[in-house]
Amino acid sequence: MRFNNLNGKVRFFLLDLFGRSHIQNVLNNLRTEQYLPYEVLTQMSRSKLNYLFEIAKKSVPFYRKFKSYEELPALNKETVRKDLKNFISTSYPNSIFEKCTSGSTGKPLTYFVTSNTRSYLWAFIILSWEVAGYKIGDKVAFVAGSALLNFKSSFKHFIFYKLLNVDAYSAFSLSENDIEQYLNRLVKRKTKFIYGYASALDIMATHINNNSNFDTTYLKGIICTSEMLTETMRENIKRAFKVDVFNQYGCNEGGVSSFECEFHQLHIINTRCYYEIDGVGQLLATDLSNEGFILLKYETGDLVELSENKSCACKRKFPIIKNVIGRSRDIVTDINNKSLHASFFHYLLSNEKSIKQFQVLFNHEAISLYLNVDNGKKNIDYYEKYINELKKHLIFNKYNLYINSPFLNSTNAKHRHIINTDI
Image 1 (tube, rainbow, N blue to C red):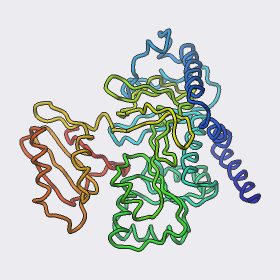
Image 2: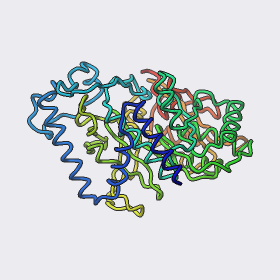
Image 3: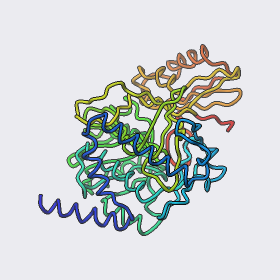
Image 4: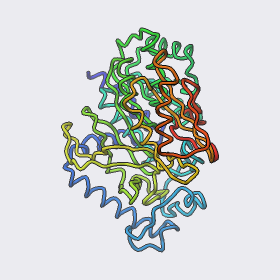
């Protein structure tokens, strides 16, 4: 144990050295903060917001005309894109680093982060892994696309991931042959944790459940990130890998970091993020850790339902997100401009156990429903009832149904449930 502690301290020292960060200090703070009283955490969040707003008024061009946080309009991506310099603090003394959103729901957004922001991001990730039993130095597999697998971009990134003992698996390549190679690698490496896109892990899980005897001797847990994890997907992954499955939800440019505890409640770290819900249920967020590039009341694009519960059996007092409904852009609009959110399709298909995943493509005249179903389960005529149900709610000139046809993938390998092909 003494060696493990020393090993952990050395790894953290080197992680912070190569990453120009202070992950260990932030992680230690979060470990303590998560058990502070709810009211204390709320006050800490508001105090940090007030402090950040004072900086913004004095040193960030966009905010100089506002006297209070309450006066601020919600901030969208287009406003930020128009002039990035408008949001850079002229008083911030240290370096800021360029980042870019994945662009999975539209045009990517360029923004900037500080060393403190990067420290909070990785401290949050490690804290979420610890719920599943992770200890620094444990072997971790990343199954993801460009949003996570950026370690090849520089030697420092490469060393950073090596210190975390991370091995990379591309979510772009998920043929049966690819998956078998991945599974063999996981076993050979004695991987303890898998961290990756929910859709990619769901595909791997289906392969295991249908074709393979995967040795789970060393595996301790799975953490899903970057995409919506449905309960059907969770059960499929759990059945295949025979370990508990945890979820994450975040929006890095807004400072949103939330993780599932042992009781699968989704806790949002409100000492990093000040948040509120607007009139349509969209999450607005402010990254309290970023004093160099300040985005106040930022539209995350996510529809979120907060829980009224202020306590959890895990004893953590971070606020609880009851439900992440989906992206505000995940909306289908028919020829009469009637709209339905992706949550409608989740509800419509949720009781059909043979359906593993879906995707809806639409344009100004047609809608296509793609269903990935268990092999040999039902025929296409059976699923026509869902097209008939769509006809009751949405008017299109043409309706299409595809069973086990390839999904349309985004450029970063994330799965999108709703795609407007006219955009």
